[in-house]
Image 1 (cartoon, each protein chain N blue to C red):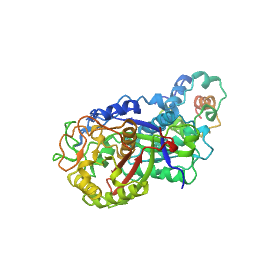
Image 2 (cartoon, rainbow over the protein chains, first blue to last red):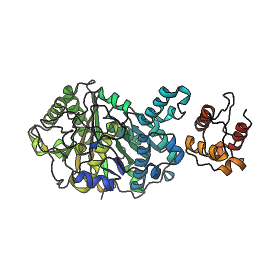
Image 3 (tube, chains in turn purple, orange):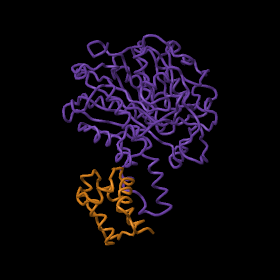
Image 4 (tube, each protein chain N blue to C red):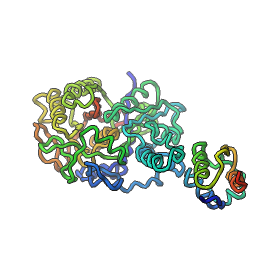
Length: 412
Length: 80
């Protein structure tokens, strides 16, 4: 059996905080980080509540020439990667050549950069479009820039796999570790707030039109009316457990199981079976019993049919025990960051395992299903196993099981 | 259209288009190439496009990364 894949570093750029030292207290305390959409003005679109990242100083994280040739989503990814490496106390030069790779998930690509260049194109003509547009918009920009910037020459890739891609990327990184890589940077970031990107998002019909940041995104309630979009995301360092232990790194969680299914675009009502099967695969592969799952991090799409489907998936999974299993969706406090969403959920789950506390579902104070939805203060108590669920807007359903590492896996 | 460009202006333009900090002294006196300064081919393409659009540089002129900002300036002042 190949050594486990362990998470040793977390990097976060989220509306709730930059860096885990800000992000954790914010989600633990259920802080609300949704607000008016201000990245562009005027905003004539029927979406006014969003999760924006404030206080991000790109110059602190990204060198001048790289900043000029990349979009905000890549600035976030480079910053999160730097934080994750720092947290893991891992210098890429200490990893065998070709042993360190990177996989990111992307949904929007470099849209703010693209907006600027489209405006130049229409206003002044094609010769006014800057050459860096060719690389800045690209879904692969984050993987490429992280790889170049950190000298990572190992297996690398990009998943344009919708929101669930954040979990799929983590599974991809684990596969590379099994194939012989020593360490992987993995995650996803988004910066989807500019007019043309908002127009693209309006097509999926799930953006909440609400103008009150405390009620715009209320999944699992009778008032669910879509979701508030967010920007930001996370990058994680995942390592071969043996290599991590040898260098004395602390393993924060084991990526123990993964499953994925596809149930077709825009058919959220049909995702129940897909989500259930993905979760069953993940739990089976993790070698844990469903009864051992201590918490579920929900997808929480905020659409009545989709919420019902997620509830049905959970009911099929857990049966009569469902009301005894805490479930949560910290993202109601900061929005759905597309391909960054699941990466942030994984970070939240790792921090929950670490701190022995389940962060709540901000703004939500009722639940129309028979679920033990954590609201109010964080729920304290030892957590060994977490199930993270994610659905893509276009039909992907993915699940990951994370568990606390055993002492021989670098746990403490 | 502004067709005169001082070394300071050119340095600022290179900085704006590529993010690479270049001083007017480097533009006037240094033989350092764009490559050595850290300006890649896409960056240089952006600089040249900007000069052609706003500073009267002929569209037939090609500048390579192994040339220096000083050579570029002399191309401009010579109005090639």
